[in-house]
Image (cartoon, rainbow over all chains, first blue to last red; front, top):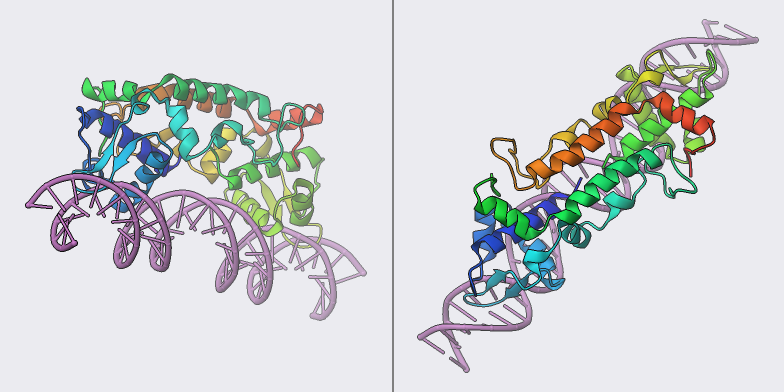
Length: 143
Length: 143
DNA sequence: CGATATAAAGATATAAAGGTCTTTTATTAT
DNA sequence: ATAATAAAAGACCTTTATATCTTTATATCG
């Protein structure tokens, strides 16, 4: 559905938002331990998110990653677009190169229902929605 | 969403059903050309489907692949299960190892809506439904 | 039987995803 | 300045998906 990379990215951003109070920054080592994900791999992912401006980062002592003013308000679809691209919502279900309403595969129309459900779900949820769920104890990030 | 392999499998089965009249069998070369897919890769896929009994095959002169009595009635979810497994419907959206109603990730409940839409779509469509669509000229398999 | 056609099987190749390790660069504190 | 710290960058490694090529087994036909 979405790549492992993208799942890590979302979980990382939620963790940053959770622990965020004012100017607190979190190092990649702590993040990786909290989420039980591979440290260096996670590092690359967060570095990429920082380069794209979805989170912030500073080097050096007391540095780390942090939420910037965009982070909490991001829709999941924004994160997915940044990490995986929007292929899930565009590629032909049967893998044909060119599939469109004027040249459809036999699943084209029916699969649109799934696409819509997926898009709605990913567009209606923001990072801060996930943070709220974790804060209420309704769900967890690690494990 | 589904693997390329699985898309090839479905398109191959629909093609077999389309060209099927009585005892006609189709060779892998013809199938690969019709669908513009890699011949030897497609061969392995169809061999696997044959081994699992979703289609039939015979070796030797005038041999090839053909629909057996199960093929036309198969739901897409059956083919997906055989080729990719049911991971799409079961794996945690955020990639956690263990995710369940009693230990959910923050997307667990919301993503269920997508899962349901996907399952309904794949369970309500059979190979013969796709064949009918192509036969009516509503859609195409190759390209 | 022997030749031939075709799926089946196996070995190998290539690309992408996922993951690890090392070196460099920027920042902070002393 | 210098040392320490942590992200950034880059060079690998591993696994899985995708794809190709070769050989083997089996069925058909003359």
